[in-house]
Amino acid sequence: MKILVTGGAGYIGSHTILEVLEKTSWDAISADSFLRSSPLTLERIKNISGKQIKNYNFDLCDFKKIKTIFSENADIKGIIHFAALKSVPESVSNPELYYRNNNESLKNILACIKEFGIKNFIFSSSCSVYGNIDTLPVNEESPLQKAQSPYAETKQEGERIITEFSKKNPDIYSIALRYFNPAGAHLSGLIGEAPLGKPDNIVPSITQTAIGKLGQFNVFGNDYDTRDGSCIRDYIHVSDIAYAHVLALQALFEGKIKNNFEIINLGTGNGITVLEAIKAFEKVSEKKLNYKIAPRRSGDVEAIYSDSSKAKKILGWTPKYNIEKMMETAWKWQLHLSPIPSPKGEESEG
Image (cartoon, rainbow, N blue to C red; front, side, top):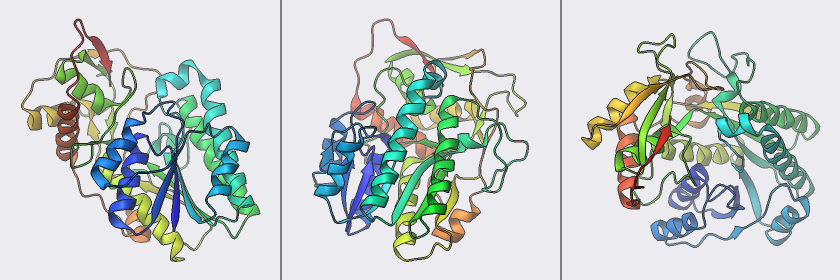
């Protein structure tokens, strides 16, 4: 049985491929144009698993090229769709790029699912769809608020597209996994988050600052209505998230999902502030982080964390790793990369 992972060279996609290879008998293929990733990631997967993953270097907005993937792989039984741009600041500065890339690629994948008779689809969604929500923790029934960034808008729209698709195609089963803040790296320390250029996410920003590649870490805002004034997020280990995708596909294959489109949150249920995340890193690394308080950043939500009881009930999923393990594995990965520090350093963002 073959699984197509779009964005397979990306952060979560690569870890999901490893979970597929380590915990199932399925084969995996990837579709990744390396717009925000690197071919080196596939080599890292091979070094860990011993298996070479076939990748289609296609822009998923090119429908004709996508069709060749399915024509050449008639044994695809399920799709996990990660491929999307995900930087909140970039989406604010270039929203048209996000609207085209994220939603057109999804429409093309769904068209192929219908044309080639594939019945099982997992969509990479995001907690950003909730916006600035009043009641915490959020669950799948929490009403969606106004999206705080074009990136979040693309995820809201993506779920709407799948909702309408599912109404018209009752024999195709889909799950949207709304995950919160992926962090950490594979326990081996041989693969992890490897942003091209200046990172947007908090953990690689912290580790790159600590190693000396970036000069200073910015905490965007300390005047939010939270316990220490910094934003609250539900950080979750990337391998926990990756395994949830395996469990979601298994649930579809085994006919455990009653509705043909389900939405499921993935989070730890614990809100961690940015300043608390810094303290966790300092504890496991035994290094003092060079950081400063900066003005608030456009597009950031004040606080959000998950009620993930539905994931436990339907998928049998509970996260294994805490914030310290996330920081420990991320630091191990950063030390494995051993980047050469830039002479002057740039400020990092988080």
